[in-house]
View: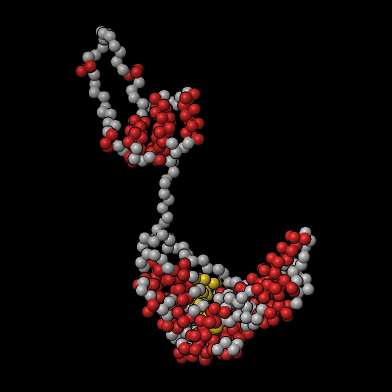
Length: 440
């Protein structure tokens, strides 16, 4: 029969319980408490304490021996022992008693039943490790779950992109009009095969334009960077690249945006790592299927600051064969960007025309920094004087004068490419812009 718990623990055991609660990782202290509980007949409580000690010190021999003794249960009670003295007249000789059923032998110290011990302490000690569900091929992600986050159709449209009239016209002619008019596309034999590559200096809104295209199409948006694809284990990068397009097919219509394409699809001739070359090969394979029935409704956009570092095979017809140069914002775009970043700031009497003229050549990121610096100047003045001062034209002009255009280093490198590496007129748009700006 199960043992009855003691009516009341001794003060020493209670004191040890308090000490163990204050130092739960102290194995010798917990072992001492388990010994006292075992000696007092509280076998269940001793098993619990021994189990926790075994969790902290699985290789401790003393802990194992204590667990074995606690699991053995209480010994035979004194009432079952034969009384000493001469037997009565009706007593039977020991050899005449019927043989009792054989009692199972307790496992020896060298053959401890760990399975039984685990079942006994199940629920007392939490598992040390939680295993994630695995796929059939041993991967860590469940097969029916989406590995990449896909956002729904956004509210951003091309009308929300300030200025950039030439960019919008190129997008409409090369990408959007054929997609929105399937009957006309069929009449003129216009193919949707291939994708669109956006290139230009950093901070000029390539990602924002890609989101606007997704909004125009009413399609989901899947942004992919190098961190989402590259993996240290052989074969995982190629699998991740395939999973990108597999996810996009499930979420079609979907715009796949490959950010920093030079990192995902760099020139294989410059790459010594076979894994990186295999990743580029996998991307080529996925792009080759862009006009198949399985990829219906999947539209590919890519962006890079250094298109001359992208593998040439990615820019062949049927892949990312259409390119669009995204330059620093023109005057209408700069005005729209400035209005956006000043909309919730305390401004007064700001002459936007002067600010727009003073910020010629700055990127969208530079314009955001101009507004931030002007707000910081007005905030510091208000803190010094104790009187709130509004942001004015002088603050914005001073901030614009202090900002160095972040696109200048990019144009310095692009100038050499436009002059000496413009094979097949690949960078004619860039040449035209540099001549217009008298930088070539």
